Image (cartoon, rainbow, N blue to C red):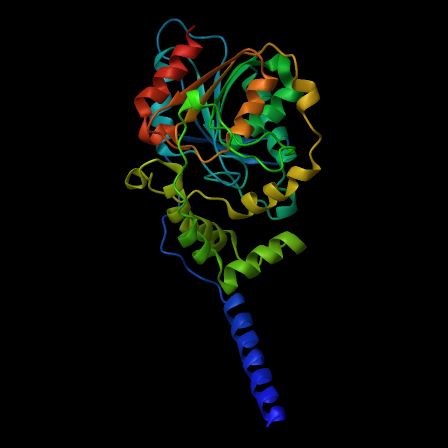
Amino acid sequence: MKKIIKKIVLYMLLALLILFIFFACSPKVYNVPYIKPRTTTKYWQLPTGSKIAYTYLPAKGDSVKPYPVIYLHGGPGGYVYSKNIELLSNLADDGYNVYLYDQIGCGLSNRLENIKEYTAERHRQDLEAIVKELNAVKVILIGQSWGGALATLYTADNAEKVDRIIFTNPGGIMPQIIKEPKNNFPDSLQLKAPSDLSAKSNKKALTARGISVAIWANLFGKKLASDYEADGYLTDLATEFTKALVCDSTKTLKEEGGAGYYCNIRTNRSFGKLTDPRSKLRNNTIPILLLKGQCDNIEWEYNEEYLNIFKNNQLIVIPNAGHQIFVEQPERYVEEIRKFLNQ
């Protein structure tokens, strides 16, 4: 009887394994939007090998400011939303030349065949090449989430090229040294805990296909799924996890389909190999503005590190806003950035 039970269990496990392999190897189509070029979309072919899509908002008026503004989106694996372009056009009205670009592997920019090339260092080199492309004496950086960490990596080696930085809910400086953030923020800031809506997103991620594609990308640096499928998968997940990026989930920004899956998974993997930029950044005098949403999901300790390093700083907490301040409080978002730039 025991032998029969063992055989049944063995056959069941074998059947489950076959099913897992079948679903793991079966491409999937996702009912999600896929980003399309805008009438304003232009491209840079950088010496790094990256073909980068960008939108240029030319300065208006007779008094053009000397330094252009470059917007760095979040992620890794995020992209420039149409909302970002709409809001930052206000800076062009103030006389700033504004550039918003999709990082390599994201949005409308090219995907790399060798996904091992998606690294934080590659993104930093691309930004260096873009600044050279603009022939700018100095630039102003706006870094959203991971874009803040990217701005920091660039500034560490190019401080003389940076006029000022606006950090909006910046992600932790990489490589990470704060291992267990407690989110012990001063009571005076009146921050609130963000929504925890990760259950549905995690459930979507725990599929045979999703697990296999991630393992293949992480362990072997190979694409088990095409970029089209993998990006659709990340967009599908984003429809759930982005609900936690706002205080009021009913105001979640609709996805435009620019997610870059392999950029996300491989860039995150590269953080531990970075040279620590902190020693190069300390005691600099670059003015920074740090905007933090009242219910941002980035722990306070990660933001506080920016204030400790960049001594010439201003911190403003935006009430009733989450990680994407520009979604829930667009007028205040633009107001504070303009005020800081025009001081």
